[in-house]
Image (cartoon, rainbow, N blue to C red; front, side, top):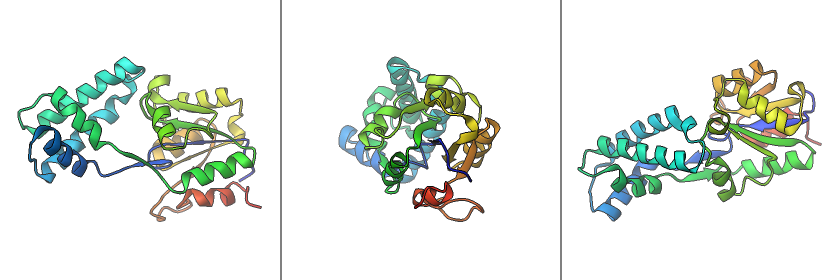
Amino acid sequence: MSRPQAVTLDAMGTLVSIAPPAPRLQQSLARRLGRDVDLARCESAMRAEMRHYRAHCMTARDASSLAALRLECASLLADALAIGVSGADVLPSLTDSIAFLAYEDARPALDRLTAAGVKLAVVANWDVSLPDVLARLGLAEPFEVIVTAAAIGAAKPEARPFQAALERLGSDAARTVHVGDDPVTDIAGARAAGLSAVLLDRSGRAPGSIASLAELDARLELAA
């Protein structure tokens, strides 16, 4: 693979992970509402909430629509928990349950790419809160561009999110590489938009993938 002009990266599973939400939800429900809910029910309810969020995150285009989606998700969570409380009651506990974490290899890899003169963008199927999430985790500064599905009105594997990043970076698709953990939304989507793509499989099992962002320098021929 030739040296790229720009690199775009996925967020969840690539730069960012999430702490197990069900134990955090269970603890918050006990602390805030005095409700003792078994962990299995919390896990099932959180799975339902996260499915709903993924299906509707593109609707959260601004602060007001994001707040509406969060309340909608909290109402679904309250119904799934079936403990006789409203979505508004559960919303603080839902917020408590979501804790994003930066992968340890993320910031060092971004710093190496920046030092090599590579332009960076995030292209993610996320709501408009992503810039704030990355900033809290110390990951926002290296990126010239952060593209979310909600802001663009289209989600990967569609071409529009990738095209938006290219336009804002001023980079050619042929000289841009996308890095992500999903074979369909990231790899197939990027290639269909004309970008090269690198699959990040942190399990190390997928053929041709990298298992860590620490391996990206060598894959992109940036290593000294």
